[in-house]
Image (cartoon, rainbow, N blue to C red):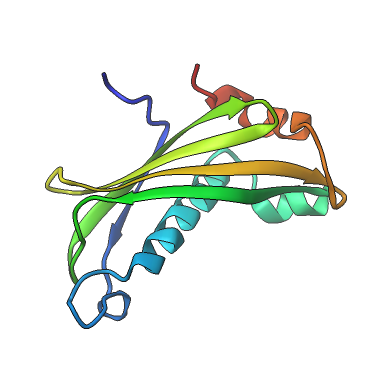
Length: 135
């Protein structure tokens, strides 16, 4: 079944992102995923700073990541995402593929909402995310 990706961002592996084995260090994938979420939000016409200024903060509470195929220095890849809501959580399903088509990472990033520093049921996110939620 085709995944309902709503956003894609292309990257190229930089030399300082690889370890002695010549593959991307596992922690760098978290940076790729985070940058993709930030760029997704910017593409919707808002930004994390704007949300924060309104007292609304998305907070990552859990990340599940499966490493499939390593990336190497110079590889180009595409980071893709779609999202769903589950109770008070907003789940970002994020996959990274080499531009040749090989899957490198499958991740689920769970976020919750705080409003003025207090946890909420996430209703504050709906004006930002409702148009992008998959069923």
